[in-house]
Length: 612
Figure 1 (cartoon, rainbow, N blue to C red):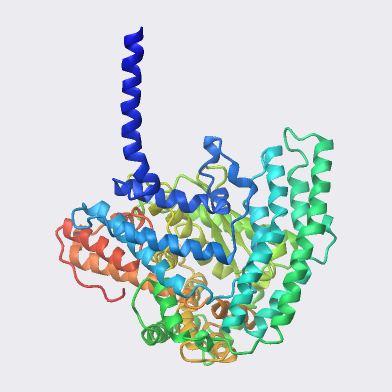
Figure 2 (cartoon, rainbow, N blue to C red):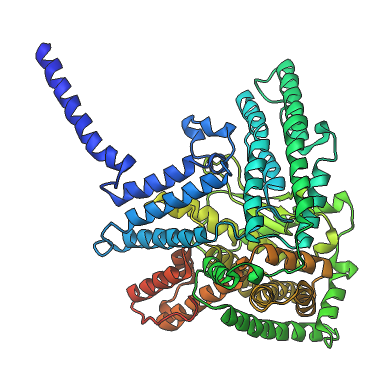
């Protein structure tokens, strides 16, 4: 028995030594394996962002929920530490031998190298943004997170919910400290942004604490929650009410006070050209969002050409349907207002809009044979954007399913005004946000195996938005928009993104005023002026992002055309879609390389890309 114990101890000692040799570098230094490095980078980043962990729900199936009672650290100090850490990860990545890697490992390396390099450039402009604006920010982002993301399945989740709400004051103070630094640097939002934020924030704290969405949401979700006795529920709701009154509302009032001050120093200049080194910053934003080296002038010209091309096709359809197209914008606005294309302004009609969107999605999902041979496992549902945030939100957006499968992907629709939803534009929007657009791309990426986890979640705007816009074209090519007005809806969606190239670069590089940009967009899309104002104001606070959509779409179409020309009868549309979808998101330059590799493997000749 003594000998067995002795040898057992020796074996355990050897195992511990091997584990130490393998794990110590993986945890603290350069890992032996680059795959271990990939895992460490993602795990370290995720563990420092509890809100991201809650949204992904990777740990909950393993019984780990420690992160669900905490908000992210939003302090300037944390941002600076994160920047130093990212620089170090890039140095470690580049210490591995890229030349000795196989094709798949090399692609993982290249994607992460591009991403970390881009983050390094972004850190140079750390304070060149408006983290609180009319579209997004802590003022609506935190309540939306609590309502849409924080999971409520048992009493512990309820206590975690309250713990997070109690941290609103700390989070607001951290964000406002960053706003003060921006003010010192001259990074102050235009006056219209400040007015919109003040209106929103004052509205959020106008109701009594019990009528605040943070309270009403928890009250509704816990009404019949298993394991939560009535007395405990009442006690927890009282605690939440106290937190809203004593922590949340004072934080919002501090934000109001600061924005009232900002209004006294703000100007009406809209473009980032007004910042110190603003032109350099805008160029970096264009590269970040489009993942290309296209200049603002090149993007502007691409936009002008696409607008002319798309408008010509739209005019031809309108003329064929008996419309006068001398004033294109006025004709489209009149079309948008025709009663036959609108729903009644009632609650019942809003429910019907959601149901009709679901019908459109289900129809195309059943009709994609021969176009796709890969599908996401997760389903997609249609929901209304929460009413407390609908005024400042986009017309629609997509939210991906969590990794634990606890809910499907969600296509959110803004129902603030039914006049913003003409029926002939619904198909295109549904294809873009759900199937085969964002839902296909994101949910498929989440399910990929045989690659580092970061490739299942890493974001690249031009790829993701380019794909969604490309799929509108795929749907139109395959008979889902044969009605001439549905075709107009498709083309209006395309010209909307083409105009973005013109006005975004116009505002931030060519010093267009807000009014000049509004006038151009109204004239060339036919969108209602109220919608256009909201869009232009979005581009002002998020420079360069709107350029990613059309640049990404054009790149994917360029790659498809290249493959069709090179392969002829050997070209397969489902195979092409697999190449684009089954490697995760990536910069357009790397997508170009991936398609070229596929063409070469099938015996075709490749060429150099035009975009990216």
